[in-house]
Length: 379
Image (cartoon, rainbow, N blue to C red; front, side, top):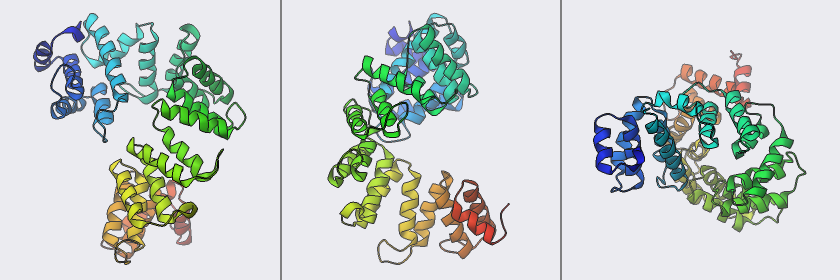
């Protein structure tokens, strides 16, 4: 089988154009499996394959190279799934990714049905079809006695099926009872108790589950714990703990934690001393993680003259508004439009300003909608 071949054979077959060998070799370089770790070589392999449209290579670039923490433990599961499926491809003498879906359909095993379901839900390698993705998860539950957290989440959020809070909660609780170490199940079960989805609202239970989830390695939970301590949900307000959990989340790459840390220090939330330099530091950290809210918030600090000498710095404001606007953040579109309208930091251009106002209005920003209505420019 392919995964049993030595590195030299892998390199030889990759050089000869075997796609499966190229993908596996890319992951060996990425994680240093039986070879000297080389991120450059790994990136070049995946980049080349991504340009050819191979979805696993695209996924590797998206997950492994788009943010700090290339060696995040979560990505090793991706590698394991990949090794398993390519092992099947190799047995069936299938080496092109276009055959992957056909191969998966022949396998009556939960892991491969799950991969195929995720392909349908996310649009990887085929047109997105949420109903088909959910149907596969439902098949696994009914015929293979296999339930995934994502199946429960489809029910909670109405993805590919009718929204059903009771069923979503039931299956999350079932998964949690059977696998108390499942941090993802703990997290979404906590959300059920926060929102009263299929159960009564119980903030204390939610906080306990969020902490359980974080301890189990589901890092997103740090943000929710921070929120609960900041707003006093199920616990007394404790800004020291809120900041501590936000910081843990930020250290784990959760960009929304950077937004909240920035706001806490910019506004002086709950008697935390205002510290604009700290706010700037956290917004910049969030920008490094691609967070558009951090881009807008930092742009607004420059726009309003809150940084440095107390005077507006429109050029820097425009810089960050443009970054966020490109990611679809409506407040940045609106403020960037104001900059073009008034010639602040850019040359005046009413046409560009109008287009930005319209884009922001279409995204539901009331200030942009009001401006257009007042000037009879709604279109």
